[in-house]
Structures are given as C-alpha cells and as structure tokens.
Image (tube, rainbow, N blue to C red; front, side):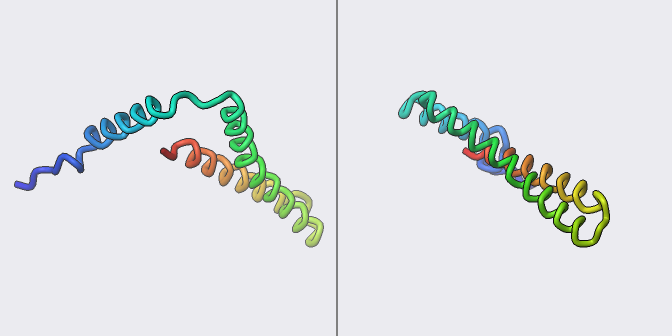
Length: 94
C-alpha cells in the first residue's frame, strides 16, 4: 500500500509554512505604518485598474458600434472579476 510521504500531507505543509512565517516575523518584526498603508494602496489599485480598463474598453466599443451598454457592463464585470482575483492572489502570496 502506498503511504503518503510527510511532505505530501497538507497538515505538515501548512505547519511548515506557519513556522517559516513566524521565523520571518521574529527576524524582521512588524511592518511600519507607512509600509502597511502602501500595501493597502497597492491593493486598491490592483482592484480598480482592471475595472476601469474594462469599463473604458466597453464604453469605446459601445460608441463604435452604438450599442448602449452592451459591451460596457460585461467588460466592467470582467474587470471586477479580474481585479478581485488578482487582489486575492496578491494577498495570499507568502
């Protein structure tokens, strides 16, 4: 019978990751207030920029084809989804 290796066990992987994060925090300490504010700002831009790009592209297409909001709404929604996914990935790194 194949027994899972300790490195394959999710509990072992998460425990090791938590230990590495704790060691990093003990070595480097807390982030400064300025750095925390900068990260919040970056997170906002990561979410807003794809939304605005989708909306702008949709408005341009709507003006070209005279379609009302046929392209604006779906491309804005696509931008929101892409921005949310990117922000989630950015928050969950390391």
